[in-house]
Structure formats: structure tokens, C-alpha cells
Length: 101
Ligand code: FES
Image (cartoon, rainbow, N blue to C red; front, side, top):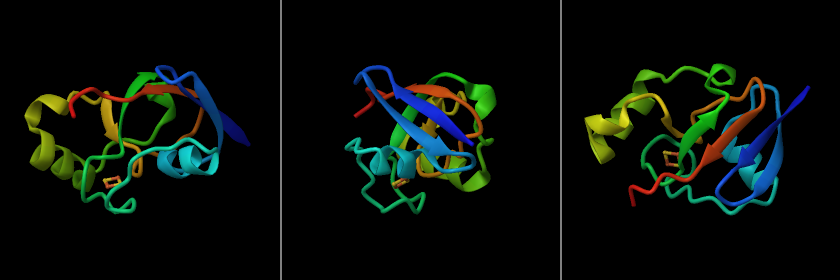
């Protein structure tokens, strides 16, 4: 089963396997996406904003929350900002690139 990830502010779409992380799906689909730490939850350059389909992704784990807080502060912990290397996809979603860099 595959799902669609649409990057709304870039007008790009990729397919993701069920349970695949967003970063891998983007890279495999040919979308250039920053991932400075290599997908190890130790930077925030892979950040995404969930625009639609928040019910179709994995919940935020402690590591992701800690990394977001450490690099970006409490204000980004509203649940819509996520680290693409940590988010698993279980249905169609729409994302964008946050502007806090
Ligand atoms: S690539 Fe560094 S936290 Fe995702």
C-alpha cells in the first residue's frame, strides 16, 4: 500500500510505502530536502509543517520533541511542526517547509 505526500509550497508529490518515514520518501522521490544529521533526530533541518492529514502520521516521540525544543524552542511544539526523518506515513498527507530558518 502506498500513500501520497504532497509538498504544497513546492508543487511536488511523492509516493510513500505504508509506514515509511517522510524524509526517505521525499529523497527516494527525487525531492531535495535538507537532512544535515542524516536522519538521526539530531538537527532540525529536515523539518516539515503538516498541512493536511495529521491523522495519517505517527505520533511525536520523546526524542523528536526534545530535539525540536532544543533547537527551536517551545513554540514549535504545537504538533504541526515535525521532523520528517521521524514521521511515519500511514495515509495521504500534505506538507510544507516551515519558514523558521
Ligand atoms: S535529519 Fe536531522 S533531525 Fe531529521
